Length: 184
Image (cartoon, rainbow, N blue to C red; front, side, top):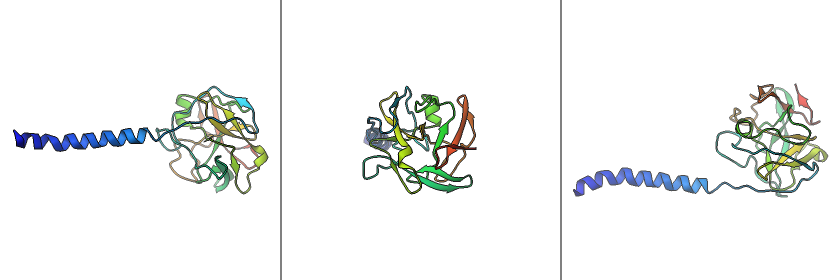
């Protein structure tokens, strides 16, 4: 009987360890809400995924002011908006003004760039074009020139632009130039 218990104890302890890790990781997520900065619009959508997978994630580290940093990156499409880690940012043609129309399955494929404070512009980014819009889940999404900004879940690393011109969820998605316009 003792030998039988020893045989089953190891898989049980391994399973128990995995469950503990899963609970710990699940408890690490957080959400926040902030007021609008430059773009006082509201939205009715929510985020369901991080920028490179299906788990929720804070897309970019907070800058000194507590806000998400937006910078310019060089790509095969020219100078485009990116987060502080070089991950490409997109706009959705279907969005009306600063209001996001991307939620549910859309937000799983195109996670919004969110912030806990005022967004911060890096070199070449016009701070006057940065703002936020309130999402349906209470988080603040970063906007640029009035466009809510998103990642594409299909981009698996910095500098990738695999979401460029994809016609998904009713309209195309484009990378964004320093002037705030879609690069087509």
